[in-house]
Image 1: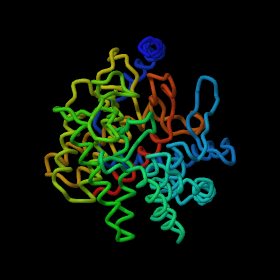
Image 2 (image 1 turned 90 degrees about the vertical axis):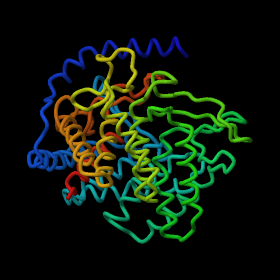
Image 3 (image 1 turned 45 degrees about the vertical axis):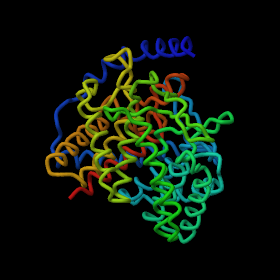
Length: 403
């Protein structure tokens, strides 16, 4: 594993040296609100054009996964891939801003392909898959059947909860292991919604229990997060704390920190319990005051990557962070509110410019360039990713809606 990881890192260093020169050209100036709003409006118009490029290249029963600019080739997935909900979710966000009926038509088509995943009990990612898609659809372009689809999705997700461990299982593995990743915090919003519409508090209790267990075991004293906790499925005890997608077990994988920030912000929204607000604020502090956070606020793929400052950036982490910070800004005092908004503005501004925002007609139709999926496995390295687009669009939508 270590030898393979060194090979992957060396591969990344070669391509990141040239790429890091391009990032230095991104303006570090803090944008004014009026100018940023103008940029955001243009971004949504450009997004509509880009996603029509993506639509035109998408096989009928597949979902976009990534695109390789050097070869001009796509990678697609089935509906059971954890990212399947981001494509329809992005279409809905763009449609909401542009009113382009062609995008809504495509969303309705692809939701028909995705619907069967409501019965999928083999994944913890039904929040990503079903709430980022059907959850947005119920608000932006509602249909009566979406309620039942989402309730069934919540039922399927709840089957993965182990009361002894106090968590929803993330990945299936060998007997006795119970793997939980920080990403799983992003799937709890679906459960809160299910309790609100059904009156069944089971979903709410599962979400709260999972969040509490995660808060206890996933976080270090500085509020950085481990990626993976391996619990004993019989006793609930912690067997191992490690990483899968980060640089090292004790490092701070950037997107993992973003998932935690977003997840505990949602926890506070849904429960109003101040312990979750404090958790979100502490995670935000770790991220925003980290000495390895670049000036343009697009983080390196891991805050402890060995080759900083030539390490690859992860634009997807910046997208998630920006969206989370904008929501969190609504729950804090004036000083923190200003700080969170300022940092989110910087992230949106950076993602709206070279080298992160793709030119129209390029990047396979994806909006954002330079994301990092899984460096240890050397997959999806320095490519576009659907969730980078989705949370970038969500961050811009939230910024437009700021009072």
